[in-house]
Image (tube, rainbow, N blue to C red; front, side, top):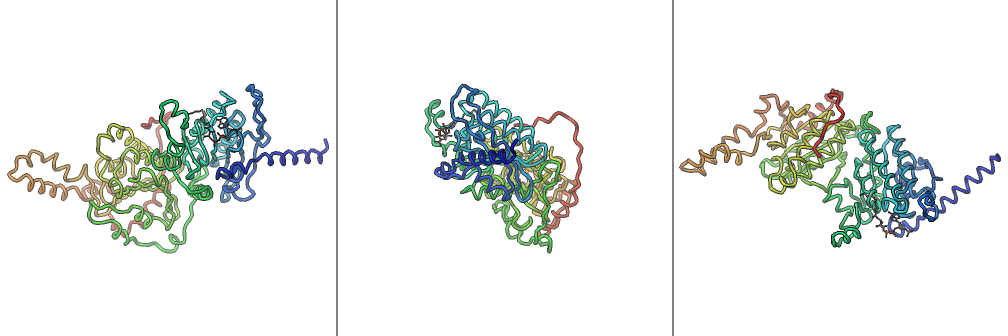
Length: 515
Ligand code: HXC
């Protein structure tokens, strides 16, 4: 063997592969190319490509199409902020980034490596779905990918960045991911496109209306993040990873900020943010900004189910998952969408050792025929299940209302909260005093000479008895009643006291979470 000649041959082959990159074709569509995306995401010079010489095998399927080097996907590994990740990036400029036999194998190979080595897996998706020319082999390729995603679920973080079509089978990789990123104008996800819909039902709909970034972020809840351009999207992926451990055996990265390190602040501002009048809403995001380390709150699903807020933040440097009622929308009630949003987030945090902190101010689950008929019982049960099963430290802070089922789900020690903290303004009750008086004093009010006056008296009576945190504290169900100014300091102390929490679970195959 002539070593020099072989090296020359390799370099020629690599140069030929690079020529095949149809970068211009992508730019014409207002999109970056597959390799440009990897370069934008990973630390400079850190990417190592695997399997660039893999080729599609059209001849095996009786097709005489030109072979596609790399089989329409670039796969490999590299670093983000110095931490190892595995990545694949589909190349739409080649057979529409469709998934064939060999591209399926390439993707599964890096999925296995990511799982074995405990590294996050990032998929950059720009694909027309299962490659029609390869029939069952492409469908099986997806089957193998999905099986591997399920195996990796809860072992390593799995992120999908949808930056083009994500059609048919391609839509279920995001569907099985922990987090889905989309970009306005270029990202679309759907199981069947507008043509098929028109043929089946006659309904006419555009790609954007069917499965655009806006639809999946605001309506379907299938996506978690929405961006105006690819550059912002990729930098947000890096930011998300800065809060996550590499895998389920590690703790999330500790990072003490300047502010939390050098002085502990009191939260007098909270008294201005949260109105005394219980029926008045306020912006819970301002409460979050006040309590957690400055500028560390990173919201997840910011556009979906606005009545609850979910996100990651740091408290004295420790990563925590925050779940909060947003009283500005639907009074912060729990409905079907917000239940799904909370449950999925709690499951993620629990799988990856991220302690949970709830900020509770809610009149309960949202009443109504529509909610009942669409299954609020089934969806609300997901919240109960997710919290009850979560073994990470769980702290609940009640600011004002914690009524009924929402109290149970978000603040009950007996559901498994390790610390329940209440402000003196907390109201813990089965339901609001008006509704309660109408039920338990129905006869007395009806038979009274002055029903209105009696009703008012009864409401006041119930308000006195129930609308405070002291009854719960007497029973030991509220651990601490604190001045709001001490919120941050107390939360830090409680969190740090729980960091070494260990909880034994009964061995079983798996539970049966309501789905
Ligand atoms: C093979 C495909 C392909 C596919 C696109 N191409 N999708 N080749 N299999 N699934 C090819 C096109 O033939 C074309 O090749 C090139 O990619 C670019 O496609 P265009 O149609 O020219 O691009 P554009 O106009 O931007 O439209 C993109 C698109 C459209 C909307 C994604 O290509 C499309 O509708 N594709 C099919 C989507 C789909 O229905 N997928 C589901 C597959 S079934 P040339 O050679 O002309 O450049 C599936 C099974 C699982 O995935 C289902 C689970 C629910």
